[in-house]
Image (cartoon, rainbow, N blue to C red; front, side, top):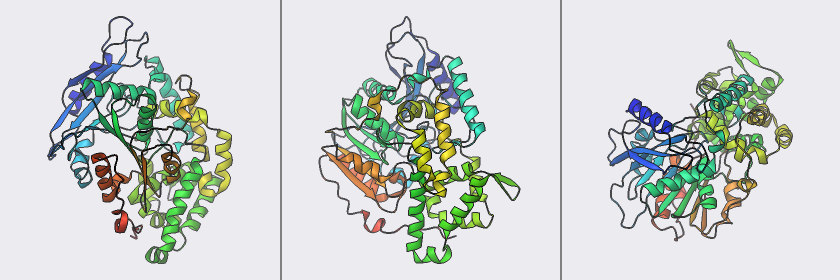
Amino acid sequence: MRLILGAALAASALTMASGAHAAAPKFTPGPCAGDYSGVANTIQCGVLTVDETRGGPGVRRVALPVTIVKASVPRPGAVPVIFLHGGPGGGVVETLGRTLRSPVAKELVGVDQDWIFFDQRGGGRASPALDCGEVALNDAGPLNDAAQQQLVACAQRFTASGVDLSQYDAEEVVKDIQDLRTVLGLKQVDLMGVSYGTRIALAVVKHAPQGVRAVVLDSPWTPEAKWAQGGPEMVSDAVKEIFKRCAADAACRAKYPHPAADLDALAGRLLAGPQTINGQVYSADDLGGFLMDAAYSGPDARALPATVTKFAAGDMARLDEQMAGRSGYAEAQHLTHLCKEEFPFESEAAMRQGAQRDPVARLLEASMGRYFSVCKAYPVGAPDPVEAKPVSSALPTFFLAAEIDPGCPPDVAKAAVGRFSQGQLSIIPNTTHGVFRGSTCARKMIRAFLANPAAPVDQGCLHPEHDRFVFDLD
C-alpha cells in the first residue's frame, strides 16, 4: 500500500496543467497509506491534487493524501470534522490506522461524525514532501551547526528542483482545505486543530471561513504568539512547573528531592562547553532540545524528575534515545511556515536577552538563534503583517490548553479566547501538550461541543481525573 500510494502521489504531483491557468482541484479515490486492519470504521482514501501556485504561470501540481473515517453511528445532521495536524512539518495519514485502534481514538474519532484527515502540502506523505533527511531539528530549532548547514543546503536543493517554497504556508493550506471541502461536496465542516494545526485553523477563520460551522483548538498557537522570542523561557517555565509539582508530591519529593538543582548543575557544565560522559559527547543544544521534547510529552514529563536524577548520576540513556529520534519533521516544510509566519515578526536580540534569565533558558539560546540564520536561505516570499495579527470571530470555538506546555502555554489561549464572541476555554490541569490524547475528559468535552457548539461545555469531568499530576517514580 505504501509504495502504491507513493507512486500515485508522485504521478499526481508531476501532472502538468495545460497553459498558464490554474487547473481545477481534483480528488481521486485510491489506496490508503498505513495499516487499517482491526479498525471497525469504514475507511475511504484518496488524493487531493491542486496547483502548487494558484493563478500563477507555474504548472506544478501538489498531491495531498486524504483519509476519511466514516462515523460508526452517524448523528442526524452531523457535519464532518476536518483534522489539522501539527508541526509545522508533521503528517497524520501514515500512522492513522494505529491511532484509530487506540482507546483514545475510539472515544472521539468517527463515533457519530465522519472525520477527514490529510497531510498538509509539503508534510507527511504529501508530494512533494519537503523532507531534508536526517537532521537534528525539533521545536527548539536546529540543534547543532551541522544541522544548520544541512537545512540551508536542503532549501537550495528544493529550489533547484523547481519547488516554489513560497507556496508552502498557512494561507495556501487554507485554500487546500477549502478545495478539499468543495471537491468532496461538503456544505459545512467542523475543524479540529492540534498544536500548529490550530494556527492553520485560525488562518481558515481569518482568510476563508466559509462552510465552517465550529472550531476546536487543542493546545492553541495563535498568529500573534512568539515562537523563538520568549521560547527559551517557555521551556524553562514548563520544566519548573513539573518540578514544582514534584516538590508538592510527597512520594516524588522523597525520592527526587532536588531535580531542579541537578538540572541547573548539568546545564551549567554544558553551557561551559561540550562534555564527555561515558564516552559520549553532549552539548547544551542536546540538553535543551531534550527538555523541549520531554516537557511536551506526558510520559516524559511524568518521568522528568527521575530522568534528571539519572543524568546527575551519569546515566544519559534517555537523552541518547531522544537524540536518535529528533528528525521527525519534513524539515523544509517546517521552515517554510516559520520563516514566513513567525520569525519575520520576532526579534533575535530579544530572544537572546530573554534566554539569559536562567540556566535552562540559556540552553536553548543557540538553537533558537539558528532559526533566524537558516531562514535567510529560505525563499518564502514577503511576509504579510496580517499573519502576526490576532484573530477575532463569531464562530463557535472551543479552546483547550494544557497547564504544562513548553510550546503552546495556556496564557496563549487565555489571551485569545476573549476575541471570540462564542469562544469557550478549558485549561486542563496537570496535563501536557495535545490534551485530547491524554484526557478522557477532554475527549468528552470535544464531542459535547461538536454535538452542540452553542451550548456551554460542562467541564465537571475534569475532577477527579485531573486533580493531581501522577509521576513516574521508577
